[in-house]
Length: 310
Image (cartoon, rainbow, N blue to C red):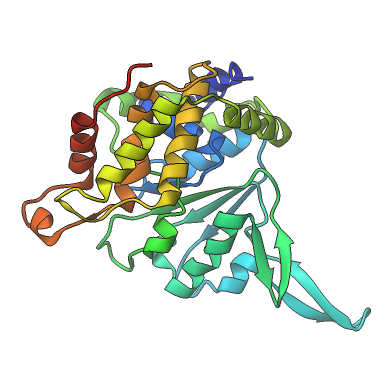
């Protein structure tokens, strides 16, 4: 089924111009079974991309625009008294969709942000002592404005670690921005031209195929070595967690799958290393003073870690 991935990418390109790498990484995240965090300024196409993926991959779509007054119960649901049955009846929250868009997540209160933790890790929510399973597949797309923007707060580390990848859209080039205008001539909406390439059931089969992609021991050792270096690097106060090791492995499998291989090579790991790791790393005070970035550290780790011969 990996051949369908090229068709999915081509459909997304109808509405997202010139962002091939972002589209590729996002699709890799979905196929790996992970969640995607998109950090950038307003208006660069974060929400549009999430909607485009839901349409072309046949996923039920739900969205919440996060503000300080959004409550945890708005997300997870709540119980109300049903007079007819004389019992409490559960009303599902907005998270019960295949693709849930948490728009501007870092504008919500920390209590509301925490409502997503169980859902993202275990695919379920617990309300009044009762557990409710979320639909499968289940993907959280979260967008956030850059740190320090008006009305924002930092996402807790526990939540950041639950995102498989963090990516940034970035501004389009002049050529791509003109192409965007061309697709919208005469009031056309390119979103209406997107076709469904697969269903949620087929996506589950694709995710299962990704899980079967082979990784030999040398590549596994390479993954462990890369993650281990994040925990000892001189510029890092805190390295990556074991959850990051799992995410890097899953993303490497999905990346190989996108290129129609049933085995992982070191270049697959290298391609996804920065998007998987950078949001999980904490720089030392000295590194911040020297204006280093976590992306610089990730690049250094890749450069100084011997690549296995497979």
